[in-house]
Image (tube, rainbow, N blue to C red; front, top):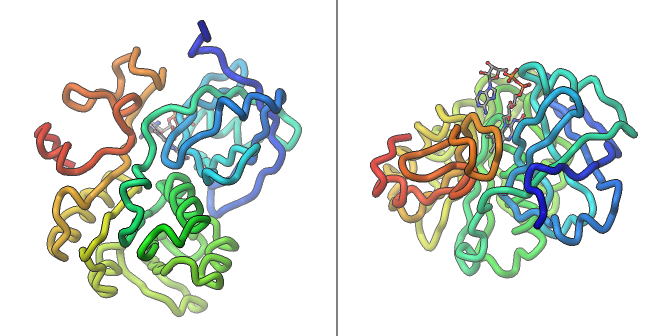
Length: 275
Ligand SMILES: Cc1cc2nc3c(=O)[nH]c(=O)nc-3n(C[C@H](O)[C@H](O)[C@H](O)COP(=O)(O)OP(=O)(O)OC[C@H]3O[C@@H](n4cnc5c(N)ncnc54)[C@H](O)[C@@H]3O)c2cc1C
């Protein structure tokens, strides 16, 4: 039996600055064959360890078609992430997973897929977006509504330019506070959804962002006519094991690590969970 606490060793291949305090890490397993069984689904997460320091959960940014390389985008907030941010290409880390259920992209096929992201919610958002864009003919349309604190906080900025240029998805971006170079939308993400008149017709929404963003996005979607079953959210919580053993991330009778992190809002409503 495989030991779920045993990490696979991965080598940091590349590190890129993505904005203030945020870096993307591209990892490859030292034993390349690990990828065959690893293959994360969009919306899943991993437990990343720095040997001798500890481990923490991070959402997978990799698309389903982007094989062999695991991309994580990590905000420096505390002890482990500070050590991670001081690491260099060639350094080794441990990876357990992938964990969680992931986005239900299959249910969005044939429909208008609306992906809503903000702040550090962007890694799972990227995984959903690039996966859907790679098979765009299977969706009625694909839209991204993305809110960043300022222009310099736009994660994956180079890719965002390419996504816009490709025309494969309708990309809508807003910043909370603009600067002299910013010609786009200014205001929190809920104003973007309202100004662009996001439509519930044959649509399914998938949202990932800070709890405060999710708290305000849901009533905005409801106001725009989306029903609870059209609202899917990815939630974060303090967690340790990632496999439903430590009991840190329970949500009612369920665990975010095991039953989530992706939940349908009508299911959360039925459980009496308020976001
Ligand atoms: C499913 C999941 C996916 C995640 N994906 C990402 C991701 O893609 N990128 C990313 O940068 N972060 C992500 N996080 C958050 C990440 O796990 C924490 O930032 C990390 O554990 C911090 O470790 P640290 O040792 O540096 O911070 P610590 O030293 O442990 O804490 C520093 C500060 O951050 C707070 N903190 C720590 N963990 C959390 C948490 N889970 N929620 C809220 N506050 C916390 C602490 O209270 C403290 O104030 C995710 C968390 C979960 C549960």
